[in-house]
Amino acid sequence: MKCDAVIVGAGIVGLACALKLNLAHPKKKIIVLEKEDRAAQHQTGNNSGVIHSGIYYKPGSLKAKNCIEGYNQLLHFCRSYDVPFDICGKIILASSHDELPRLHALFQRGQQNGLSGIRLLSSGEIKEIEPFAEGVAGIFVPQTGIVDYKRVAEKFTELLLKRGVEIWYNVRVAALRTMPDCVEAVTNGEVLTASVAVNCAGLHSDRVARNSFPNLDVRIIPFRGEYYKLKPHSEKLVRGLIYPVPDPAFPFLGVHFTKQIDGGVEAGPNAVLAYKREGYRKRDISLRDMWETVSWHGFQKVARRYWKVGVEEMIRSYSKKQFVHSLQKLVPSIKESDLEAGGAGVRAQACSRSGELLDDFFFLEDKHVVHVCNAPSPAATSSLSIGETIAQRAALHFS
Ligand SMILES: Cc1cc2nc3c(=O)[nH]c(=O)nc-3n(C[C@H](O)[C@H](O)[C@H](O)COP(=O)(O)OP(=O)(O)OC[C@H]3O[C@@H](n4cnc5c(N)ncnc54)[C@H](O)[C@@H]3O)c2cc1C
Image 1: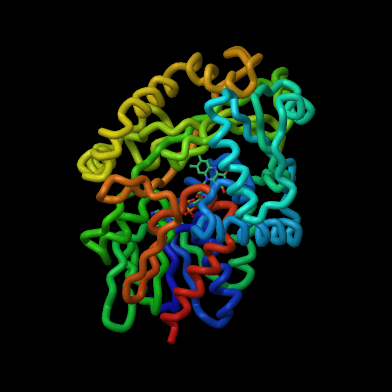
Image 2: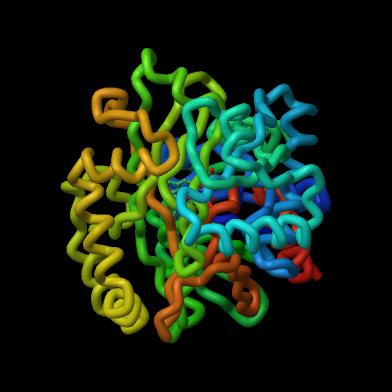
């Protein structure tokens, strides 16, 4: 079987990339290969549903650039195709005076990233926006919104099929083999030959990339994010989105409250080491996945440096009381009885051999393959911009 481009993974990044490639090259035969029986079954379908503004990211980084560009493209897409979204804004709260320098640094970063209308809040002003929240100071970010990314991905899928792009479900790519003038996608069925392949395999992207780069310098470490939901009678405690000041040592934002586009409020996610790459329950274990994590030199370094935080996360994962304690820093009146168990998602977080949790998006190119090796949050917000960048790189291989 021959085609022009093969895309591995029907998550939001793979689908956006297919769409951008098709829009720029409508005559090229593009096939998306997905191991599940539907699109968006992993990170894309199990995230917080936040349209991020770009406040957090280092100016000039790929995250900053793609988040802001992706934000604009996403809103335009949702308006054009009637995907419901709500730009409800969010607040970031400093719960103690120690957090003020980090809050102010974040505010400056937002200004550097060109976010207009963000403003510092006094504790009184916080109450005007969120009557049950408390903090010594805060930031209001008017650009932040909410959407259901599964619905966005469904719309991408619908459009792709209409435009003649094929999506093959239940097809797992075992390897991408580069040949002198093409690439072969070896699957559980047939072998596809293409001018270019794009690896958007999310939690498995490093495994797919290792065929091209046997000494690949990053490995995906899975971090599960568990949620609680506010019981209907407690939803009044939260009007919109309430976040803590994040710890800059970690690429996660800290447990927060998120209003959902279809109603309800989620609390979370935490960030606990998962024993399985697609392990959504605490009891999910894969010996292969665990071994790949613990045997990675980079992970061992991270574990030595942050073991205390890791143990605390583990305790908070098993103890609702501890989870609620973290939430009480934002909304002191919240109680265990206000929360019921919610879902979970697993983040694909790349970790370098030298022991860094990669903060920025990371792409790698081989002869006929573009690998998306790190696309954590805000990759859903940024998907159309990331998709465009990758599609441009991939299209260079058509000639
Ligand atoms: C808990 C959580 C909360 C988040 N919150 C937000 C948020 O609020 N806002 C935001 O912008 N981002 C958020 N993110 C990040 C965002 O969801 C991800 O960055 C984004 O979904 C990544 O998309 P993807 O297509 O790269 O990966 P995925 O959605 O994981 O898709 C990868 C696809 O590849 C397929 N695949 C894997 N291996 C193979 C193979 N060998 N052959 C064929 N198919 C394969 C998988 O089945 C999957 O469908 C969150 C993530 C998590 C986990």
